[in-house]
Length: 299
Ligand code: AMP
Image (cartoon, rainbow, N blue to C red):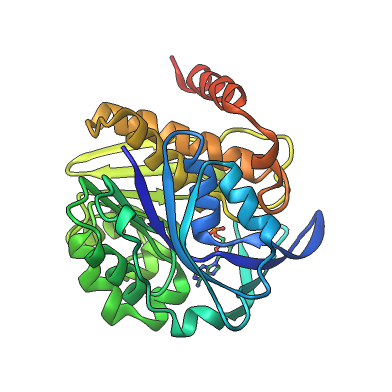
């Protein structure tokens, strides 16, 4: 199955307790698509400015990602600046510049319109809605969002959730979206907004999956060093959706396997800044860590 994703393609400035990088490749659609490309064909809908390096587009293409839907517009690429605390589950957004995304009107290429899976990664919900409206009848619609959009665009975000089957948010976003402090109550409230399946990402504490009455938990892969958590959530979604696309099996059992693949991809991303770690691994590394994950949780 093939996947269409809409989301940010960005330049990031990131500071963690281990170092600092400026103007590195980032963005929700970028992390998602590169992670998903290990499993299935992915096409991106996004916009970048004239300042976006050809080499970065070439990198996406080298992963087999279809970039026809990335518009190159007059102006500057989306920019995000974030700083992590000593406790790297916590981060502050210091600056966010939408730039070319402020005026973006997505035009989904004709070749994308029969996509099997549509993933709405973090961006303004009106852009997520516009892309979803241009895709025929996807077999699965997934989405992600962020504190920024929950706070600034709740009125557009909440109605969109009625059309989303699988939502991925982190614990802070789940609490903000639901108004509940308890994570289980938060999950119940969010499921009542529309999604049939909810994944709550909890940084180094792993992921909780809520679906109907079932709850499934997966730990984060224990790493000696987490270098930069940026993109972990998007790479998680990329691995999860990628595995579902590869297998075409949306059964609860396979969704659980997909959650482990998502956790595998997230565990690689955090080992280095930007997409540096994903540039260096291959399918064998992914399978090896998947098996280590199975061994970790089997009893
Ligand atoms: P994550 O760490 O998975 O939550 O995602 C981090 C990525 O999301 C960074 O590479 C940023 O460029 C991008 N990003 C940060 N804030 C936003 C936002 N409000 N909308 C879209 N993308 C964002």
